[in-house]
Image (cartoon, rainbow, N blue to C red):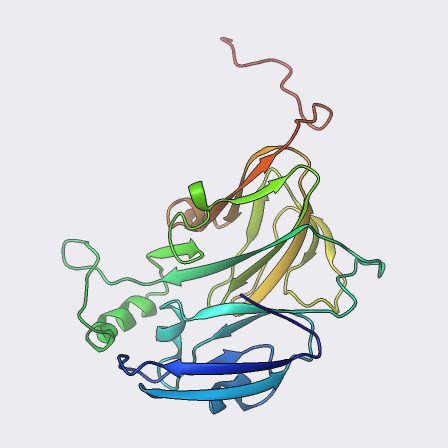
Length: 269
């Protein structure tokens, strides 16, 4: 994730290594003109280009590779991310009062379409060009083989889990360049949520699940009130538990019995 402030100039150097085979560029949803910069950053293998643009709109935005004729192929190969353009005067609540946070985390959600052979096993290819026809067929089913956070199944679980302490406020910025998603923090909430990630708009409050349209990035603030493991998922639960769109927050601190207490433990009826 890139982070800048409203009014900053962003200077990008895009290098396409001479070992690559394909044309690349970059489309910033936060930029103005020339296909988000995509029209001015097309580079063949062995070339480089430098682009400068001004970040005029505060919010969290998607960026992705978008070469003509290959846009979905490149986006679903993981060539996307997000940029946060933070307001100069900070985040505000629905009444215009300042909001603060202790930590910020980025969750990049990605759908992959991996071809399978006649035995149902995932195929391997010697080059992108060799894979193109099969990948295109897999994409056109609109049925991903994987939906993951930060690049892989388990990308935000186990040793990669996000961390916090009771009483800390965390800003979660979540992007999905291609498909709709429905973030949900199991055991928590969205205290303040900008579902489409644009900070000039007042945030919604106390959400259980929020909707981020494909090609968009959202943001949510939550103050953790209990310790433990919180699952952060795409609440299309098939995509979360069968395809990989799930992560964990590990939260340390003291348990608050007033918020929740087991009155009677499991026992025979």
